[in-house]
Length: 326
Image (cartoon, rainbow, N blue to C red):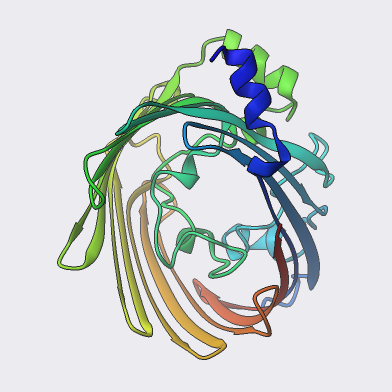
């Protein structure tokens, strides 16, 4: 079948799945000069998929952050804050991902386009989703890895068996939020300027009923490289996650990182605790803790309350999330 016919058949409504989410968060801090803050974000993903190929279109929006609010004064307190912003800092709706993928053979697959690499690398059972789990940035992704934000990339996956896979991605070193224009034209201009690639590879397998992921990366434009490891275990109502990262280059802000998390689910309630420790080259070390309780009113409606300790300050968060799938 020709590429045009493949694309037309892929775009059939029978192959479409739509996922969406709206999240509203209120945060306050013990630090007296920090203003309370309301923030909202939305996600809409169109996924056309057949047995041989797929097309993913991800539209994202967020409200404007407050420089004097919790997100401005404590940047690690809300990984969902300011996920889609104009160059002037105002919130916007943007096309975050546009990626096409296909199978080369039964065990080989490739994807290319504007991609969020954190969806494939440094993934974690408990520490990977700020809309459903922890808000703290260190409990979302490994801060030793300078992931480009929504960038042009090619991603290859080899599935050895149902438990073991290999991945590698070659991407432009800077993404949509990393350039001053925060525009698609600016992103392509930045690619033409050849600031250097970001390359990451990972091996994932199951060992003793746990999921292990080992990875290495190189950010050429920053002259940085490093390693990471994630370990997840789920048993009945209990979930455990471990995350470690190391970078060799002093140009990186964080040299060593460790994160751990535990979650207990009973009925509609999920109670989680996570802690991080980071060693920085110039600004000293930091450690964060977050405790969160989440109540699922239904599959579509969830409420959560959390407390964070960031260094010596306290952050309180209340969150409502609405999910749907069609």
